[in-house]
Length: 259
Image 1 (cartoon, one colour):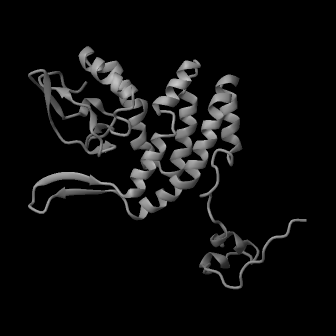
Image 2: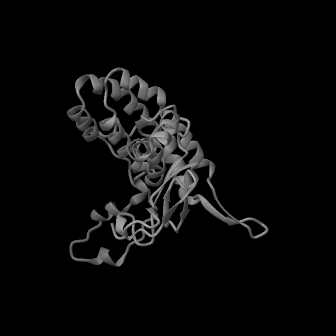
Image 3: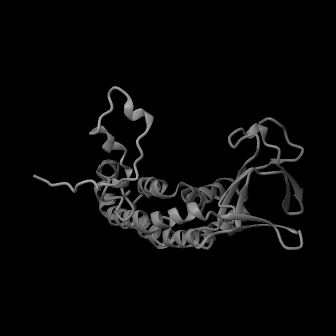
């Protein structure tokens, strides 16, 4: 028989009006004693999730699972440990937009707390976007799609905002460049992205006040200016706003509207 520790004589739980309802009881009051639940920080979130392990084994071929499983266990320990701890710190001390300097000049700088920069750095070196890990998988003919889904699922439980910022530094921006960039720009950028030069520094600037998915309602314009484009407009949300390489969605000035 498994013994359970007795509840402390004093508790932070305050009885509420609902405790007087017909089906309330002293025994059921235990369900509100939230001080008993310490959370999952400190656990390996991959090892603690049998459903995720089952899904990974189901969708990954045996050789791919044998390769990915140690990486997922490592990520489970990292995300359930320091990433989760840093996420709690970030909640209390979030990134801040510094709009103006002391002289009133618009600098629009994003100041990140150490908890964010440390979390990004640790994930860059251990997730499936790491160049060495990607090359190893490619050399074995292993697709990283399912492994990345499992990693993103774990990260979203700890810090969904960080998962958005990290996602733009993964294959999102790379896919945009590969499919839509001019041949010269593609040849210039793809080797840098694949080598990890922009790791964590790529960003997406898509959403406007009218919404992020209604492409026909976009108002930002791109006007030809020599061999480049001059952008003019207002973006309402930017993934990884402190990045250094941006993919910006805009309409070419003079083109058709509402498409």
